[in-house]
Length: 501
Image: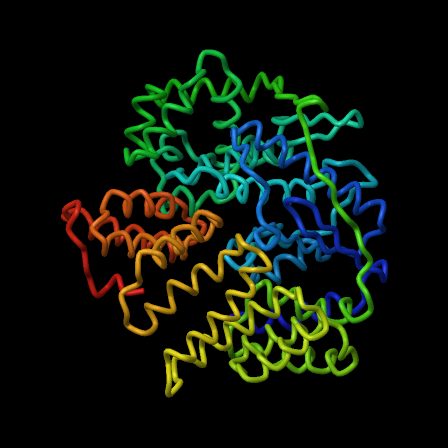
């Protein structure tokens, strides 16, 4: 599945357009692009202003993420490049991969010089809106609402005076609304992400979701209805029933939407400069070693299966031989060796990186992963897991809110067939709170909660996953678990073989 991605990534980055790659680091983002420094500074400023505006809309004013929980953005060519990286989906113009070890987004080149409303920027803002929503308060959210929210927020403009304006017309959605067979409001509100409406009208689904979200948020007569609907769905009420209670007759709503589109006036929400606050950021040119290893790093962050790692390992080893004193290069080699199943080589590369730079966090991460995997077959498993956890403890010392050491602490008991103590269970829950967008981590939390007899909490952990059909596998597991928990009694441990971690 991933093998073509590896070949493509190396070809893509072998001849960068501007020959110089930069990395920008801010409170919420790490961005890699072959752009000039000035354009990178403008780009990161826009992203941080956008995050601030989203926080005002969602009333999510929590602290910035810890460094490893920031979103990494790779700017990687045109839409065809992104489609190939995504696995060949012809509809994809950018994509986002949420995970505890660092979420990533891949987008086409960002064109700021010719205006700020290019499709490439809209794609990135759309994906980041998903990330921001998932990183806030966890709640069951219908797919149409996720997409409508992201489309609405992505239509942002950034004034020279520091203001941010949201909710402008999605011009790229007008054609599909005018000239394709639209998903009806009734179908949209009843859709669970797998209905014929979604499959047969893929593009109009997004346009109609955007239009409905825009209408419900901008129309005074509908004030408060979207919040009532969202709260009802979050509490477990099916979307169609919640919609009937909050919106009334869907036929009336359909006709109102048609008039709204026909008489479009594009009401917007504007936040002035004094409402938008962003922190400091840095922009640095990649050194020769980092630029040489970037193709492997990008592909590894995208995700690769074991049988597709040979090309990456070969390339990473060659780069590491040329740049033996580069901690970033050695850290990427450690990840490549780990993904290929070469645990001892991964540990050696990680140790080399740490010797060069004591704060090389990704080196500690993959050294710990490799030690953890070796521990499963060790003669003295307890000592081996203790050694692995010592490495993760060092990583925790470098970054207290890094989620992986917390997860591995819990798993160090599960892997040995031991009942995790209360401290380890709390660690897993804390890790999930740090990365609320990692669905598989929350599935583990739900299993743990069910086994403890915390049935209500397990259901609340599962509902947001069950309604997010971006990941059909995760949502399918969550739906099956919710069904299994229907007869479970609060306070009584629920154990089921099919729910094994």
